[in-house]
Amino acid sequence: MVLILFIRCNLDANPQNYYIFATKLTDFTLSSNCFCMNGIYLIIGGNMGDRVTLLAECAAFIEKKIGKIIQQSALYETAAWGKTDQPSFLNQVLYIHTNQSAHDVLKKCLAIEHDMGRIRFQKWESRIIDIDILFYNQDVINEKDLSVPHPQIANRKFVLVPLCEIAPNLIHPVLLLSIETLLKQCDDPLEVKKMNYTFI
Image (cartoon, rainbow, N blue to C red):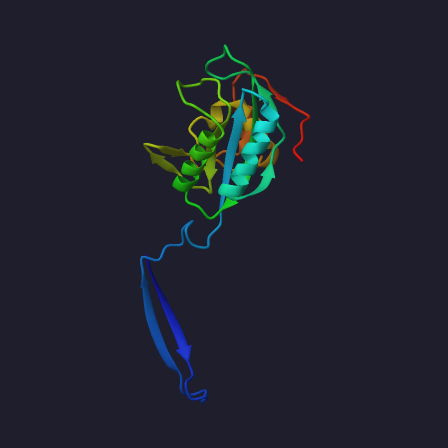
């Protein structure tokens, strides 16, 4: 991207004598590394240990390392999805403003998981903490290590229910349907139970 800046200077205080200068800035990007703020939705969850405390710690890490939490859903409990012979999960959706790129957010999420003690063995295993990127602005990213929007959003009530609480009118940039509509259409049979926990 090339940005042309025009600067008008009056060097002799005569309003009729202006000098126009043009300067070209190459490789200038309005990216997350600049001054633009990106809106992202994350879902955090876990089914090990003191789940409420761990989610609160995770949210604090996210606000410290990724960006300011603007909105957060209530906590919701759901039976394990995929591999069902394990304790129920507690989940929460966060809406965050960040100046970081989607890939940088992913790296920070993985780092937070690691710092909180998560060890990956197999898919759908029990976990002390899990952080997934649901949406990054209205961007569509399909890469080996990152898929945005998350490809399973429309199939999982434990995602759609808390997401619908804080963003029912958000439009899925691929499916072109609102979160509220996706929730109504979702045939996931697992019950999603709203909990009464609150974070201080």
